[in-house]
Length: 317
Image (cartoon, rainbow, N blue to C red; front, side, top):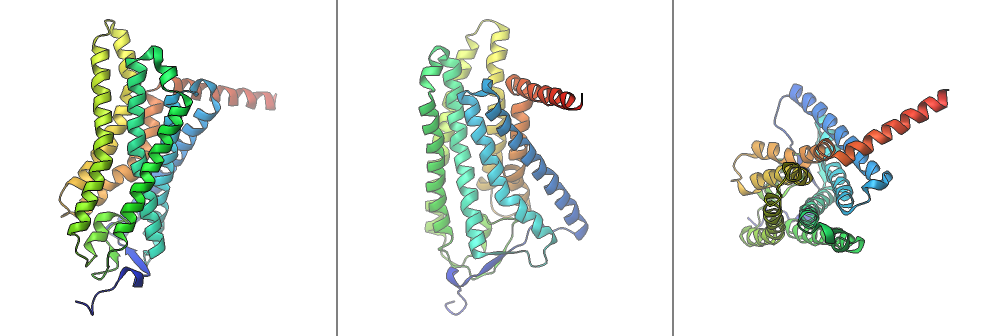
């Protein structure tokens, strides 16, 4: 065993196997990735631009939403470009440093998003359950602290996960059976004893996931209790409409993550499909969910388009 073992320091690169499909399907997948990534760029950059330019969206909810778009944009950018390059690459290789960087950044942004969604749930709780104190309780300082805390927790988690993963020994193979550097595929090619690592990783995941899920569930229990006390149907509808977008985003992200990491690691191809949901589909859907179901965002888009139209006609008349 000692002769065969190759320590991580001797590994210079990995091979990202990607999807095991025919060459024709590779082209189709490339076009699909390209379309989805273009929509991610357009949707999230558009959402950030709208929030920054429209004074009416200068509220805590949209401050969080702007940060959510920023996170979605960057963690999808950590995955999608390299995956698209590998569709046309013969070697499909990624350097050891590149793999570490990709792993670190993805872990950073995905954990940050989980904490940010919890902060957004708390924001909705205050807005609906204590509307008269909303502007006082959700102050600029508190919102900044919640966002900074989300990034801090994401960074600490990412440092721990990355350091634990890349101190493993990789001797079985250099081939990572995935389209990006993820925990489970890297475990499969490690010849280290993973028992202690898995216990620590599970404990870390519990510390990350449980508080965020508890905050979201408790917030919505109070929200539901408050909304049911509203007598008018219109009032209930308005209250629920402010939460439906957030609930949709939470459901898509957590549903995909739970399916990916709580199911047995026996079907790598199914894992790749599941991971597409939170690496590409979720960042694509988030701007659509918030723009299609949000009156303020739709009004802001309408105003921007009317301004552009007016400027265009003024220029040519």
